[in-house]
Amino acid sequence: GPGVSQEARAAHARGASVVPLMRTGGASSGLFEFPQGALQKPPFSTEEQWSLLASNTASVDESAAALAVVVGGAVAYSRKETAEQAADRLRSEMGRDACIICILGGTEFRGSDSEALVK
Image (tube, rainbow, N blue to C red; front, side, top):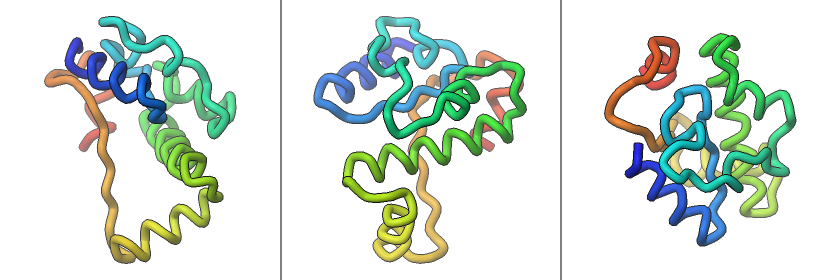
């Protein structure tokens, strides 16, 4: 909701990559003064991947897979490294078994299909 939008505006204003999971609705779909620039496809995402982040008809698995690739692309883009280089660096820094994901979101789910994304 408004809190997510406020965080996204602050991050976007300082030049951070913001990857909204638009299919979940709320702030990530553009409500609550979410930064409009963050809703535009960034250079580290393909059209297909970006569409899957917004699609309510794609399977949750498809959207989640696209999200993982886009977030990896954002990390690589910000560090001027390939996705493979970013993955190797993160594994060496955090350990081979580490899986750390941060998703900003609200306190309630807007649709039953989006709840599976965070389980």
